[in-house]
Length: 148
Length: 148
Image (cartoon, rainbow over all chains, first blue to last red):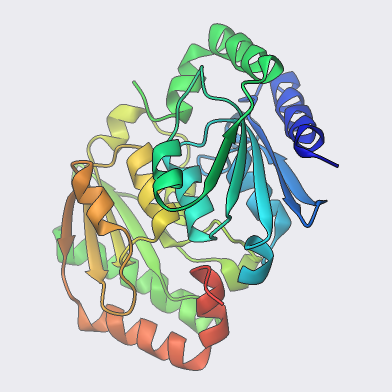
């Protein structure tokens, strides 16, 4: 499986969340070319303020040794917010593949500054998910990124 | 209630976690001088990799409007790691009171750089909790901060 295949898993997670009325950000974590875990934002579904796509995938992966994270790639449909950027840095995940960063630009600069390889695929399907959500639920989206 | 009173609530959370065999980092969030929520690390208790003291308190507070976070202070027994730093920045919490930063120094520099007021109380009780935990469970502690 290659980067596009794993991003597709993240997109499926985002689309599942959108179908549930939730924030359509999905993520997947691959280690040694194999899927470790996937997840999606759960603000609407579980009232969670810390389960974004990336953190939900990390939580679903469970407790892992640093040597596992060191071989991981985080796939996410959307540019990682400050919290998810911090989670990636905490666990020293060395590579992040981002679906798109046009609807929201997270802290990619900090990831790069700390030595993380950041790849932005500029995927139209990822952008379409976000465009639809922001149009339908602008208040929930603002809440999810800490904006008024 | 003043800063010391809210830090005491965070310490009680950390002590509760230690009594459960867990990472003894606790946190409390105050808004307008009133307790909004408290929490503690749940790596051992729930197998969680994203529920640190600060993020657990945020999760326990539930969904909040940006105007609530804008009036909040985060109290934490230990200097916030990269993930918790990012969560504080995401929700634009303007003030963080830290019990101690001798056993672990998080990204206080980034908080300050982004305009967050950071106060370190250098509390011996917070340090004693961490010293005991790191002595008894060094492997769990390293796992919690993404180290080998």
